[in-house]
Length: 137
Image 1 (cartoon, one colour):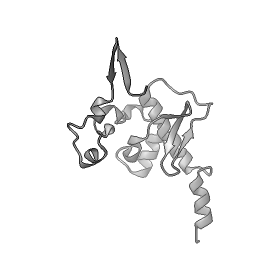
Image 2 (cartoon, helix red, strand yellow):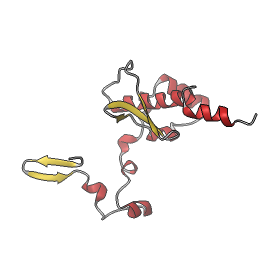
Image 3 (cartoon, one colour):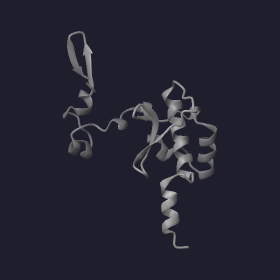
């Protein structure tokens, strides 16, 4: 069962601190009745020593001081396959089988960020088709 840990014969809810009604800080947390986890998990902030060469060049080209909107992009899974979620298409983009993923989650997240940007800039992205169909000039 997700969110449950078995310690000896005792069953503990590992998500109790995310769903416990006491200590909900923001109005949104009170509204939805749970903590918004990424607000507290410092491990989700990227380690810039692990940035890929492509992302480094991309951030410099864009004139950004940090990864900004990419900080919440992480390697996930769709049907057991590594994937990154693209909010623009509201769907998962699977990592090609030809890419070997490292064991370190921060490195995997950097690869996910790079793949997402490359996919969003590619001709295979669904928004490219929409742009072509609805461009006035």
